[in-house]
Image 1 (cartoon, helix red, strand yellow):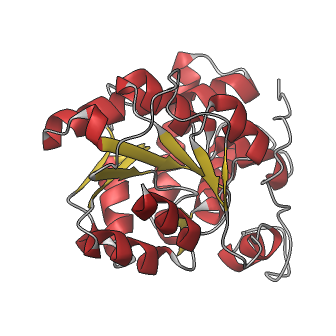
Image 2: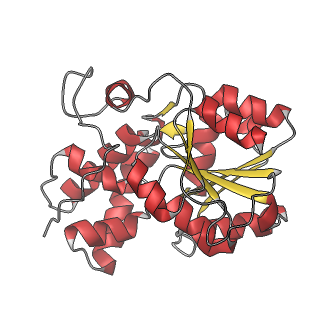
Image 3: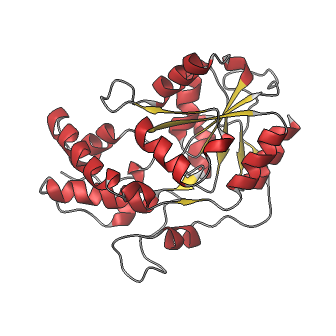
Length: 272
């Protein structure tokens, strides 16, 4: 029942400096998805989604977590493989599982493996067994992220994490890697599946922090970040190219612009 996910230009192979195909390590992933050192951003063809109006300088910047702040692919893919094996499904090659990074897990298990609601929820339970026991720390902060966050905070920007990953795990990851002091809050999905979609998380973040949509900018690496921000409240999104989404994916979704490095991301935001 497995449907091979569409190949992504940013989906690296699951082999490299680790020496084995399983488990993955962050270094091997990063080597194959490295962005050129020269900082650059490129307009993505529009100013604000569905509008020709210029973007106001945002005071609030909302960051996705996986593929934007940290390279979480080793822990996520290892957790997916563990869940599939517990479900009695032979896992496909790991490079075919990169579509799991970003979207809510339930939909991914249903789409790619034909699971019904009950099966998908069981698979998520198994996924969380591995992830909570240590998979969440099979992860690494992207080079340049702390420096970019420091610049934004120093310029008076107010930062928040807004992720489809459960909030409980997200907070542990952000704290573990020393990023928590940069953020006013870490807003994520709920463990009971009542808040899983990106738009739901963003509405929750807006309400929790009393933010106005017109004062916000989303930063993320997948179309779900772009589309979720638009659906939530018409929030524009800056796409980043060091994560798991391709240039084509982000542009087609309507990203405001594309940044190739964390340095370029901070440059672009501070020039608004």
